[in-house]
Image 1 (cartoon, rainbow, N blue to C red):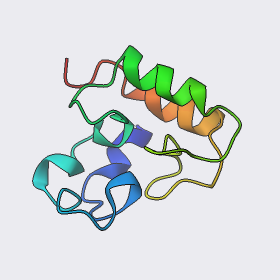
Image 2: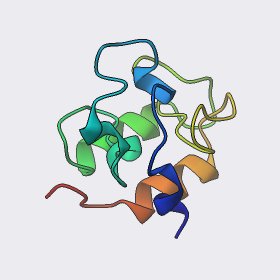
Image 3: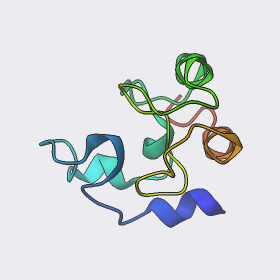
Length: 90
């Protein structure tokens, strides 16, 4: 149930400092794993994560675990969070 821990997290992660960061839709489980910003966790998010695998996060960052700001590298922790939210929004 790690994905449920993101409920209530605001103004952090890849949207930190933007006007979208504190929108109510951004605090739902799954949103943190929506790397492409299309309100769905799907193959497009996985492809983006795979392009940054075992590297420093790119733009947009796929370093999503541990919430809220990641750990500076795209690794198995990020993939697990993506998998836990797989097909969110679809």
